[in-house]
Length: 129
Image (tube, rainbow, N blue to C red; front, side):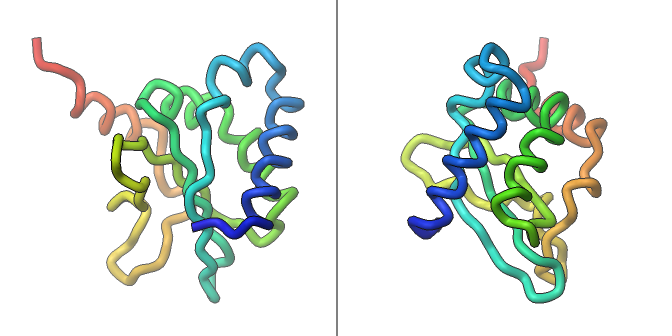
């Protein structure tokens, strides 16, 4: 869970994201973006869990606008080294996915997950024809 201070920092980060990507893109993809968890790891810094309601904004943000998200969030948390974006499920708190936790319990860096990996994961959930 986020503290009140961290929630306020995320509001400021979202305002910065809007300035970085422009109002039209922000309104299309970023409005449903929420911050859900911030974890501190001694060796790696902080990891931030964000969430969106569906796969479409997650894919769009991760594919095209992740630099803006990272820039805005690192302005608020300079020791942030990983951002994960989960899909919210009605009635459940967003959780760190298995791709975000290594066997030793440390977080993967966002650069460890390639866009090809994300495309493969999304294809796995696509309906068969």
